[in-house]
Amino acid sequence: MSETVNLAGQIEKQLPAGLVGLMRQAGEVAAGQGQRLYLVGGVVRDLLLGRTNLDLDLVVEGDAIDLAQKLAGTTRSKITTHPRFHTAKIQREKWSIDLATARTEIYDRPGALPVVQPGTIDIDLLRRDFTINAMAVELTPGGYGRLIDPYKGQDDIKDMLIRVLHESSFIDDSTRIWRGLRYEQRLNFRLETATLKLMNRDIDRLDTISGDRIRHELELALKEEFPERVLRRAAELGVLAKLHPGLKGDSWLVEKFKQARMASDTPPPGLYLALLAYRLNSAEAEELISRLRLPKLLAQTLRDADNLKGKLGSLADPGLAPSRTYNLLHGYSQTAIIANSLAGDSPVVRQHIQLFLDRLRYVRPALTGNDLIKMGFAPGPRMKAILERLHEARLDGKVTDKKEEEKLVKGWVAKESRIDKF
Ligand code: CTP
Image: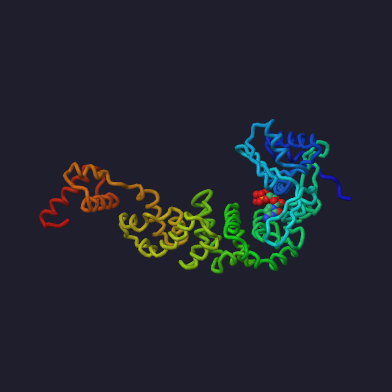
């Protein structure tokens, strides 16, 4: 018989006191109603691993909404309930608790939404993705801190393995393929042999996942501390090709992601995505955009990054005037510009892009349209042309203050009246 493990000490040590207090209180309220309450999922895994995790999942063998409402009366937290799913969320600034009803999900037919029925914690754990995520810690007084580990998650943590609970896990939900890769790379674990075989067997099911869900999985991968590791593994296993056959998770990508982190502490996921898509051609980029149903802004970032590739040749000219650099780059999204700076290997291109981002994009002439009107110009295309020329002169350092700009404009006018052309 396996000995009982108690995680009360780890809970005290690793979670903030306020949160622990609230969990104890929730356990007491549940017990008062004759129900048991458990901490489940990722946080249990992370308690055993000594990793910080402040997104808590609680499961009650009873009614989650009822429990949440009783707790709302005694705590000052914001509580939202979802009666259809029998779940509730308690939110504070630094942490959040998801409260669910222990459940059995019955699928009437494949692809249908599951019919949810109340169940016990053991059955609730059985519907989960991997053994390391299928453990629970009891929070009700009497059993407080007791670890429930029906599928030997502790052994797999010790052996550093990612293992599914049963052989239809990836059929039930093939986004678990991406989840498996994330945990494997994040924790430096290994996909257990039979799990890897099942993954290979079920990989084509990724084609049936909606764009929104698959995008969500990719976003989660890109939010990992080292997303390139997940993508490299995804490429190795043929999972990345399911997003688009042209995507590569090779040493180039690894290097560029590292450079992105050197350029900014936490690069936005859009930058990683633009680098991932960088080696696709325009048509392929469009295919990826529609497969992932990318929101407008992200889609624009990929399109901008693609369009800018065609300008890298001009940007590689060491003698490029600042005004020309400005004209080549302005109007493109900053993320797309940075992606090109990282992806294009030319130091000259990088310098020009840096100059644009640090300085040129903020440069404006001191003279405004109103100033020109005061100088006797009428609004219209001619005035617009003068302002543009002034902007270029300012970018190229030919003028540095308002007085010089006025002088320049007057000079142009004088010349214009001489040769009757501006
Ligand atoms: N889960 C699952 N199958 C999924 C998604 C979630 O079985 N497709 C279960 C797992 O038990 C997981 C829990 O729901 O631990 C909570 O899901 P989520 O918050 O996505 O996972 P965490 O384990 O908290 O992962 P992370 O550390 O990445 O936040």
